[in-house]
Length: 234
Length: 102
Image 1 (cartoon, each protein chain N blue to C red):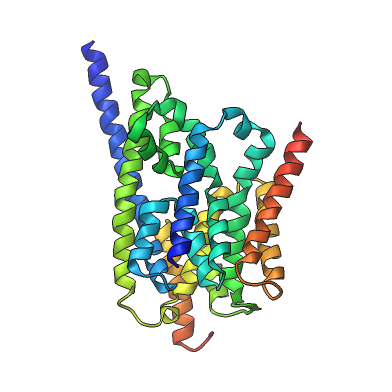
Image 2 (cartoon, rainbow over the protein chains, first blue to last red):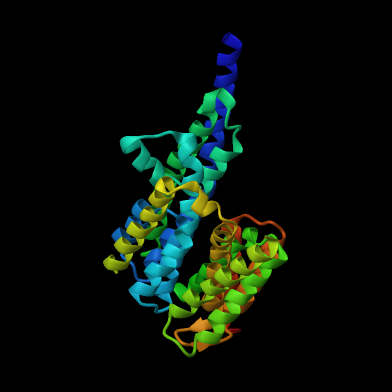
């Protein structure tokens, strides 16, 4: 019995340690997001509201850069939703593992993002009666939430101090940041063709339709390719 | 702007919530699964393209293009996120400072 307790103590320390390091890694993105938010015309409270309430990085970068490129509020909102669809899949996967109820469940839902799900699923689901998976999810979710918001705040206030964002290359930094987000997701030739297809459609439509729409139109590539490839497999 | 911020946030929370209540078999469908996986790729790639080449509704080649090229090299060498962003910003800033690009 003592052996089990000792094992759990070691496992617990390891899980929480990993959760904190992930939080710090993600905070780097948070600073960039905060800086981006305020340079593209959001106020500090609006930028903070995105990190506190939306709390899903890719959607946050999407809504802000769509607004920055002149897209309407509606297209920016829809683009952020499309980007957030994968969180639905994550929370479906995590719900039976977390077994949370009431307010705990509503909080768990908000903390369901790439990092917390990946950490939760990286544990053996049966280890320590599921406690390892649950601790990994909760500690990662909470550490990312705290550090992401703190980092957003630091980024947001530090940028409002500087002058012309273009002379600091911040417009290029946005492009590079988005590129760094998509880069690790491209793992196959299908992914690569979806990436190129999306980029080409967006560029082709840019001179013709209002800003924001080209990015939404690019989502069609995923729908068509996703439908066609899964059809071919079955 | 508050409309976009709050509507965007509400929708993103709703998506997370929906996943916790709908029957598993809907999202487990291979077609739905594949589309959900591919959506961020086309959206982010489109954003990268627009953010690099578009100035409102016209396509231009300016300091952002060499900056993205520098970021690509950095990504190939598995450089951490923050450095990739800084390298791109520094490239564009330097080209503009020396008057080599707009």
